[in-house]
Image 1 (cartoon, rainbow, N blue to C red):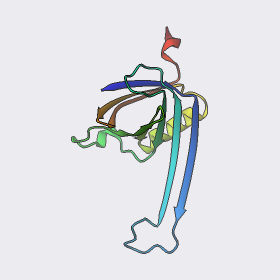
Image 2: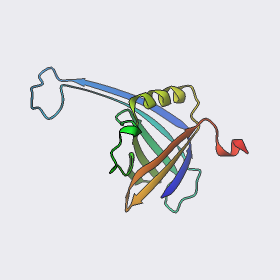
Image 3: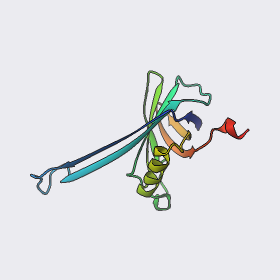
Image 4: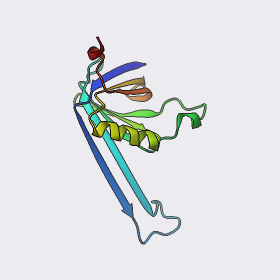
Length: 140
C-alpha cells in the first residue's frame, strides 16, 4: 500500500447530459444519460518511488455507500494511468458525498487530498481517500 498526499491547486467541474429521442428497447446505450465530474489536481507532497509529480483526481457520483459494499470489494477507486509525471485516479463517490465535496471545493475549503493505493503492477485500487481544508504543516 502506498500513500499519496497532494495540494489542490486547480479544480474543475464538468457536466454533460444526453437524450436519444429515437431510443428503442434493447439499444446498447440508455435513453438518457448524465455525468457530472469534479477534478482535483495538484502537486504531490508526499515521497514516492514512482515518477509522479502531479495527481489528477476525478470524482463522480456513481459510487455506492460503504455500508452497501459486498465483502469481495477490494477498493473503491482505481488508477486510470500514469503519464508524463501525472497519475490519473478515479474515485466514484455516493451522490450525497459528491454534492458535499463539490460544494466544499467550490467555496475553497478543500486544500489537501490524501489517498492510499494498493498497486498490482501498473494498476492500483484506492483503499483510502481523505480531503482536508488545512495542510499538514499548517497544524504544526
